Length: 132
Image 1 (tube, rainbow, N blue to C red):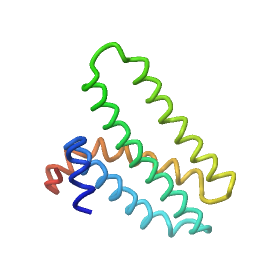
Image 2 (cartoon, rainbow, N blue to C red):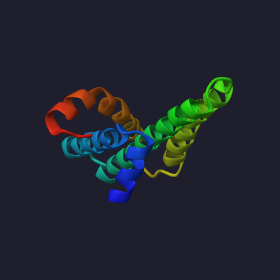
Image 3 (tube, rainbow, N blue to C red):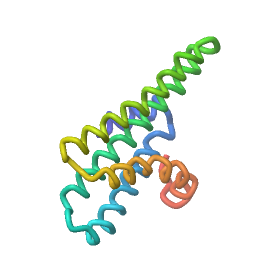
């Protein structure tokens, strides 16, 4: 686990805190929401798929930022293509999950929103929890 955290810190110092925020958000959504649904397994699996997508998005965004800084100007089309493909892959994952009846699409989307919630909550989490 320490090795993964160190790898994330090398990629982007804010990435471990962002991933921790996504996981905290997912835990809260699971604990609160699971009581209000009939199909608890599909609720949970959809949320897990969404959280993995959110973590994957965070890591890929950090990789693209690092690559953009490293290669400099003149490669905007390549970076834009990679950003677009990121969302295409997330759509493919969610639609595959729905087609194979592996989880709830709505909770998958709620899990993906964990990236935004965690990003906006970072100043508060850094101040309260000293996450770095």
